[in-house]
Image 1 (cartoon, one colour):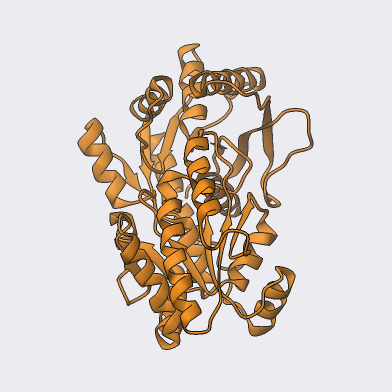
Image 2: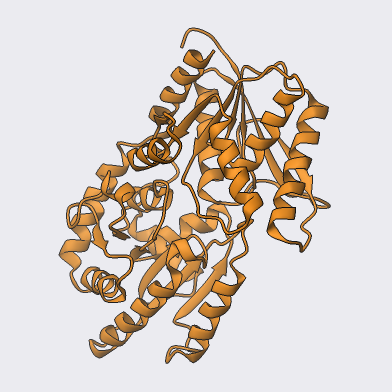
Length: 389
């Protein structure tokens, strides 16, 4: 890198969603390289909210009221709030504005329409099929109106090219290998004690109860696995963490709760919904769990998978193309068909009943994670910033 640039990284939330984790980690790595970085994000008005973990980069939170309203109206209001805050701050001194979501990207190109000279980059983590027409338009505009695009996998590079006829740069997600380290026996015992666990087989899912996380099929697969493990004299537990999102998945969550209520496991404590958690709790969950259960139907890359593997946690993931870019079945993970409850259950049971395979995947998983540090990831956007200028 020949010079230090003033870079803004912009995201839509303070919670531990993949795009937010990416924003914070990339910003810190860029700052370590000598870039002058500032983070912008939306935060709930009227409180002392901050990010889900400490951040070593200067940041500005733009307050928005958490009002119950139609999704399209909410997104429009959030774009307005972002636009007004950036206009008031003045961003003409920035070399690069790197948006991680459609809200901040739309606010930026509105500023450019006002005559503000800025270079707009957009990281597209994945493309969603939104039912709301305003949100769908917001997503498309944020992609096609940007000066350059970054994606986190080859799969999404091809999708952007096929759908929009646009080129994009692949810059994979990374993992903080200092924060997520192999779990020692002592840390595992302490984490399980903290969570009130005994000797259950603990399956962990991080991401919330929503369609693309495939939570309903995971629940059904876990019910079957729980029954079969009980016949072997073993108890099992499903921990569901995360879930902060701007999108409305209430119908899906209601269906999930109805299934839990009618399940043979209802009231027995075998299914725990933890909701959004902070960074310390996430580390404790990785340490306490036996298996990461992550049968998503859509992902950009899978930050949770990398974090879990970095801690030595064996992984059951789906056969999504993005996962197959760095996972191989029974080499460093168990890959299952996300549309098949039977396939998901088979993966859950195989890792719970084959300790030698679990140990092998844990070792290979850590080696895989070590290929994806944030320091290495940050080198590529720094080069892209230079080229775009």
